[in-house]
Image (cartoon, rainbow, N blue to C red; front, top):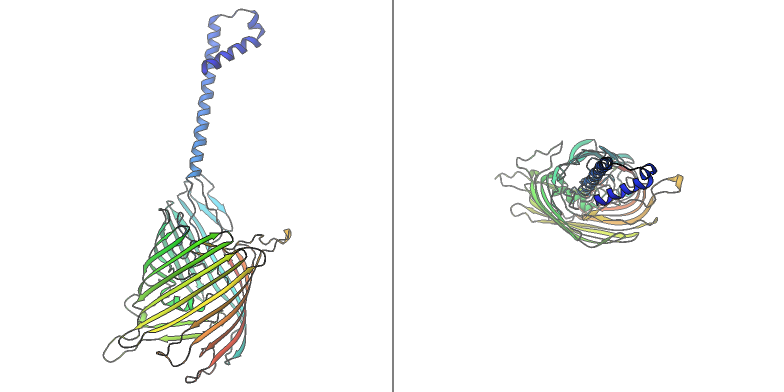
Length: 499
């Protein structure tokens, strides 16, 4: 090839140079010119090889670029399942790929900082919920508190270490108290598997395991909240998770939660174990079938005592619609009394077809007591349906609810107003067990919701709630024998931001 090239160049030079064509040229001059041309060809070939090497290196860097740790629906870069509900507090849309040698800072709604080699990332995260509620008392004589509330304020950080580890550190402000929320490290280096150690959200149920930023109503179902306080929510422990496009499965063992205001009423720390399994035979854009089951057992409860309670789907007043307490006593013989252990199990399901979706959960709580005291059983459930007027569809990822992104994010200048969702829910909690009390403790609520999603991170929620509770604390003069009933309506709204 090189000889042909040199020969062709020589003929071209002879043909296009009249002086050379008419006058004889010495052999030495021809050889000198051919040597010069060969040197130029060698230089061009070396330059071409160097450019090809640089292009190959850039392609390899892009193909092996690390993924940023997922948010709320999962910490693992390779596993879709969240070690800590990922779903816990959400997180904004972020750049998913950081190329080696890429920009040190990438932006979405917040900055993400990236090391040049792609081994480390760091970004802030947070949630702000501001509520207002006004009440209309129907029965019971209770004086409700109308007004505003900072429902939750969270701030923390997400990051990755050496591409195979993800971490989160986050605190929360609720009701004038600051507490540690998430503080964990997760190994994500093996596809479909995640191992997480630290304080994290116990995977129990669908609403409770999804981010609070992604749920449809101001508050979760009452049974989810009441039963979750016993052995769910956030605990220090270790959890193992597996996920593929069809199923997710988690199992873990946990102690107590390490909050700023820690409970120290008993010398031994509460401990328990937990599991959750989901299956999604269909999970496509606009189409979903989701089924799941979860459960936990918890022992050595603080002071051998349990309180089950929740509000009527709104917390501005903060009064409980239903509440019962099972406390220990101090008998003369020193025998233990109260609750020995608690067992929870729950079933969950959801379906999506275009802009229409349905979802529901059933929850059961079983409490074993010491000595001859009979065991206690309580349950609750909710079911709701929703419809997007603007055509969006809800979505699930990793066995939990995913972020809703409007088809046309809020931009009035372009005639875009975001997404509008209508939803309705029936929610019930039954804390009746006549082995504990002759009175019924049964509460329920109907909620109509209008949700306005301006963007994927900003929304405004409107809830109209009609609630009723038998022998409820929301009665001004309770009657211990025949019982009383509390009834009321609440109009509640929330402005939500997460990043």
